[in-house]
Image (cartoon, rainbow, N blue to C red; front, top):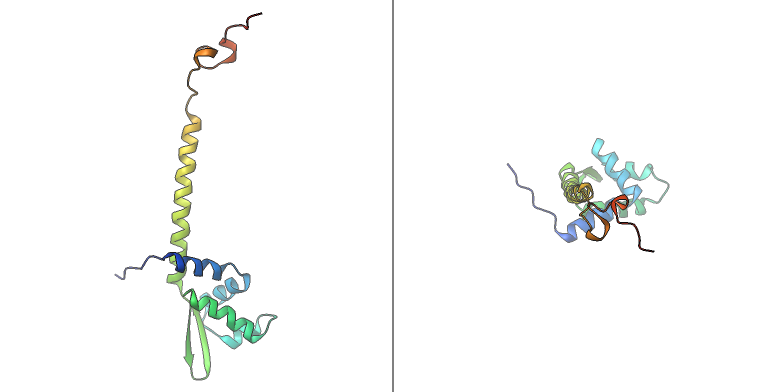
Length: 132
């Protein structure tokens, strides 16, 4: 079994920077389905080939895709393992916040402590009448 390296802060920054752009997310989606050439990817966007190449470079830097040469053609494929690492990170944040919310819910569900100046349980109806 291959053990995955955890993402360090710089890796996390690169991954989420790469996924912050809609075009890059679309490139990842398209290349998860099937390996595609850079030219085929570029044809699907209303931008220059150079702009699409830049998006691909950002994704490759974040290790979300792999590029390989086949003759003169450059092929791009998404890396599902890299996406799984990002998903694990998001899941860890979700677990952290769910735990905090659960503790807050439990705290809010506890009965209010008795206030000696207001009667038995802080109930305004059981408080002594005000002095005139």
